[in-house]
Length: 107
Image (tube, rainbow, N blue to C red; front, side, top):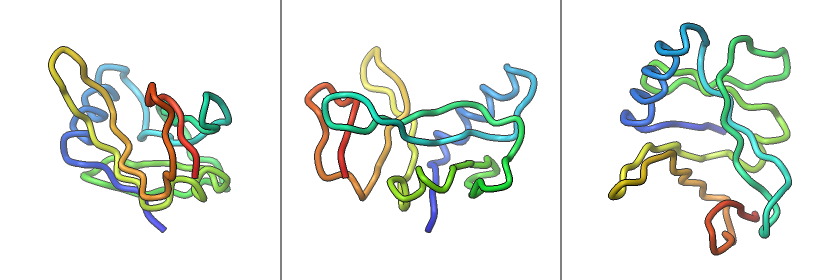
């Protein structure tokens, strides 16, 4: 089981942590919501909990709880710019369907 991020995503996270002034990495999780059932959750991590799984990619820690890991195993986090829009893109091999707006998914 593993989660990774691209060099571009890692650089973006590192800059954000530096600007924030604290943090050890990024927490990646899922929550129940949206038209398709699940949505991604991203937040800064200041402390790793005992049950968390920690992965590292390009020097950035990716922290995930055991329940979310079942939905996220094998996911690569990228940071993309398309025209005026920019943001994280989740390359998740477990996704079977996504809603039309791209905000939620099902496995």
